[in-house]
Length: 184
Image (cartoon, rainbow, N blue to C red; front, side, top):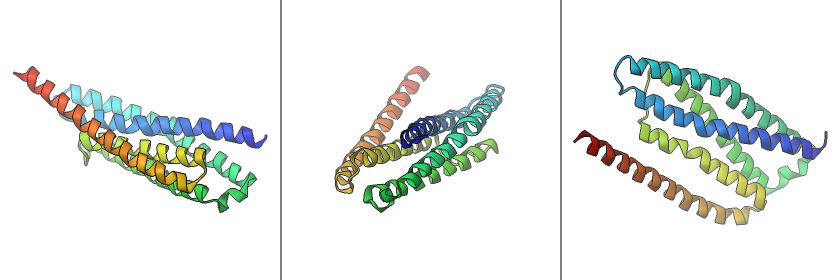
């Protein structure tokens, strides 16, 4: 296999991993909102969300995470000089953060299975955007391969994050107004 084969496999598993990282917190939102339902709907939804979360974690997220790391490490083994470059060092810091995010997601998953709802659905919606911030940062670093240009990317990222949080709050207010309107 050549470097490009490993790169293609790395990209495929990054995409798979991020699919799970984007979807799992969304499931957490629905799982958390289901606690406000009445029985038996609540129990049916809990069982379904628990099943979906378990399958997503075990069949997609965890294998994709490990395969991303394996193929990324293989590329670094083939091209060790990248470890001397600032953009790669910063990328690896973000990758470490992404792995921490992955395992924090697991912690939330286990809490929800035990019926512990530490976060509101709004907080989980915001948590869901963290993966987007990691993706944005990592892709800009890999494409630009320049830590100076990356600083502009960070500025764009901060603006992007503020816009995302504002959009989440606006959607929440619209939902609340619609809920209040249907209750009248």
